[in-house]
Image (cartoon, rainbow, N blue to C red; front, side, top):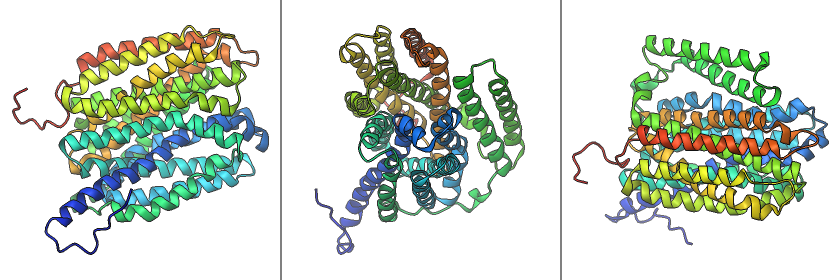
Length: 481
């Protein structure tokens, strides 16, 4: 593939338009790589944990936080990150985000004790929260109509594949050069991104009126989301009746209440609450909650089942997730084409049905049968539905987003991505406790897969009512369909 640099031909009349077109798709490619790296880091650490824990002599709590600290900070700061992209422009936020994420990855990889490792993970979360909504906003404002659906489906599919690929890449790196490379691999990618982003992402003319930041709103919503995710993580670890679970969840509810009051009173709110009453955005947020939640919970359960109950190595577990990663991508690309023609609702409902069937097939896994014959079909089917679900969620919420709000809407959608993951992994690890103890049994896994068969089935019924039937790029003009 050759790259054509349109520098010398700017005076030819057709060139600027062509080069702008080409630059847009290059920007999509570069930003998708960035998002892939962020999502990868949510799951890549899971497979490396046994080695990493032994090396640094981590306590059980520190092990949990190695995985969770990243998602907690990433999820908590997303709304602020999205708003910053709208106020200061997407490009500077993307660059700052990549720089922080890359440095924090190096810190994590070089860590010699748990304090430095957790500090690095928190830093990665900050970088990710600045980068992710800004990158999605840049894509949303750079494409329009049918092209926007295609661009958003590429973005969504790489995000989804990142979850599955994290397990695969984590397994390969841990088995090969060692767990530190799970973090080091981000450094060259980050440096390449910093070099290429200024060339492909155009600067944006800023709206001076948008320049006020609602600090109080940002603090309350970050504390609320962080507190909710913390409570969920604790529930997965210690159970739902513990004070460490109930207090943070109660605090989150109170803080969300305070946030609503703040947003109604400040002159330039972080989030205009009317935004959440717009049906496409509500539908997108709901679908993202289910998509990320069920997919991450299934990957968590699947890798625990393979490593913990069936004694598979990190590498074997990783390779097991190669077919589902491909299925996810195929499903997402097909959905990207279909969303523009049949609309978001049918794509979302069919996707949820596939996720339901996939989990139903997994209820039958045993402690001793052939793991490929028993588990792989279910995992591939739910992945085939998972891809389109991410696409339906992203295109529904952002299909009609305006220039000035793309960052914030991206932040909203991504926040539900993180919340879904935290809630469902908490539910999964609580329900599957019997399968995660020192003498694991199959019953916990069977119960958990049963729960995750019911959840998408119920969501499919809800989606029939909630998801708008129109195709996302219709802008309200009278179309004869």
